[in-house]
Structures are given as structure tokens and as C-alpha cells.
Image 1 (cartoon, rainbow, N blue to C red):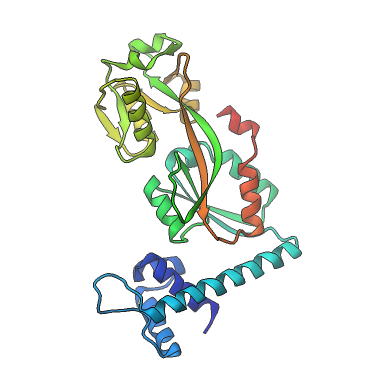
Image 2 (cartoon, rainbow, N blue to C red; image 1 turned 180 degrees about the vertical axis):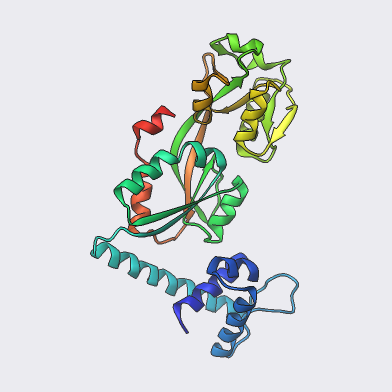
Length: 299
């Protein structure tokens, strides 16, 4: 029995899926099934109840899972401590992030991190918010980056930064002549929004409700880039994070309008699985995300 066997089994239990566990470990689904049966032969006990339609552990399987997690934690702690003793900052950091953060907030921090620690590889995946949480829970990535972080029992959320929400409009739009606007000024105008399940959309809907505005978007999209393109062709106006429209404002393809006498912010957070052992590289990455970098402020 090797440490890799324990990890595969733990991933299987946590994902409740042979295919997802296979993907996490670079194996075929058949190989994961064979690993599970090999463990059952090794322990001379049935670990997975195959009579159930949904994935279900037996009592013995639950005990093997609990012990596997304890041994994996001890092993990861040992590796981390050895790296710290050698003052080694290397390895791979896997990040799952929503598009707006990954494309517009994260780049200066990754640039700084790779400059300071060139022996570390960083892999970034762009996902919808709900899938970022799923990636964290399934240990598919080391960190997640989301807006308006939700409280999840198994996930630790660390504040990253706050972004301001602004209104964007086509340069020829009637509102574009103003430097500042109030929320009620949006009444009667075509609004372009994010899909209803996206946290920023939920926050914008709450702003409208608080100001007693009944507004239904004329268009809905699942990412910031498509929202911006729709505004650039004058299909309507939108409320978006300010950091995502810096380049368009400089080029003059969009006009950015700030709210008068009121600031609406979008909190961003770093997510990781609770109880996860953070390697020296991961700790340094969190430290850099906590810095107030000049190029990030410019965004």
C-alpha cells in the first residue's frame, strides 16, 4: 500500500465519482475502480457499497477514508517541513478563478510572484463561481478566487481586495455626458447584466431592490468580456467591476460613470480547503496576494 493509493481513495470518497477521481490523478476510470478493489483485497473488507445507486461507503470504507486523510495530512506536513528546512520554494500552484479576477485582477500578482519565485509553476483555470467552490472541495486546485465569497463549512476564505462597481456606457449614450450618476438615473435605460446565478449579478439586483427600482436586464451573459462587448455596440449600459474596464476607458470605447455620494464595492477572496497543508510556495503566494501592488492599484 502506497501513499498514492490512499490519495486516490480519498479523492474518490470526496468527489463521489470514479471519473472525477481519475481526472484528478491522471488515471483512467477503470484504473481507479481497480485501485478501490485492490484496497478491498488488501484490507479484506468491502469499502464501497456497490448495491446503492449513489456512491456510498461501508462502515469499513469510512474508517479507511478517515485514516487515509490523517496519513495524507501527515505526509503533506512532512514534505512541507522538509522544504522549509531546505528553504526551497518550488512546485506547482493550481488556481481556479472567475474570469473577471483572472483576466483583470490577478495578472500583476502572478507577475510579481513568478519574478520572486521562478522555480514555481502557476496554472490558472477560468471557471464559473460555483465551479470554483467545487474545485476547492474536490482538491482539484490549491486556491480559488471569487467575488462576494460565500460561507462554506469546508472552505477558508481570505480577503483579497475590494473592487468598486461602476456603470459603463457607449460614448454616445445619453448618460455618458455625466461624470457621476445616481442609481435612480438608470431607470428607463436598457440594462445589460450577468446571468442570474453569478454573485455580482445578485449584488446588482440587491442594489436595485434597495433603491426600489424594478429593472430587468435586456441581455444576460456569463462573463465580463461579453457584457463589455454588448455595451461597446450600444445595446445598453451595465454595472461592472471598475478593474475590468480600465483598458476600454483608456481607448475611449467605453465611458465609466461613478456613483454620486455612494460607493458600491465588490469584495474578492482567496479560497482554500480547510485543513489543507500549505507548502512554502503556497504561503508565499498568499503573502503576495495580500500586498498592495502599484500596478494592481492602477487597475
